[in-house]
Amino acid sequence: MDVGALPRFGEPPKERADAARNRLKILDAAAHLFAEHGVDGVSMDQIAAEAKVGKGTLFRRFGDKAGLAAALLDARERDLQEAILSGPEPLGPGAPPGDRLLAFFAAYAEFLDANLDLVHLSETASPGARYRIGAYAFWHQHVRFLLSEARPDLDAEHLAHALMAPLAADLRRATTRALSAERAHRGMDQLVRLVLSGDGS
Image: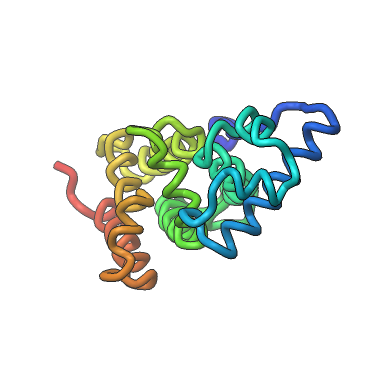
């Protein structure tokens, strides 16, 4: 797969120095409060007070708590994106497409569990929000490319969505008590292997 075919997402716009300082203060305050009280237990007013910025500055910059969650996720998503585009195999280029696909789903499942509340907030801010964010478009395109290489007989575009569906934060959050992380990750691995090895006729 040509790594240049995958668009990079979430490139930050250039900003004034004071705006950049305020953004970092807000993100640091939000990360601290979310870690201490949980995402659901923190209000935008609390974040503005902790960051020592006006509420207007906070809302103009991020819109709402979901926008703030997306901004906090951005750097963590970039790390995974860079590993896919130029990191060591099997997650990065060089390994067979099936191995890369298994490595991606293992890496994304770990990413989801590590950032579940933030991903959930960003994906459920409004109906269909999950599918409008740039990160989902990147993950879907990556899976589609690998599937089309590993199994050209299958409908890679549709199956890429189907394989991403079990990794929706809403589903993972709802099943956390019933399914341990280990069990959920093992099940995802089994599902990908079935798609790679099964008969699509």
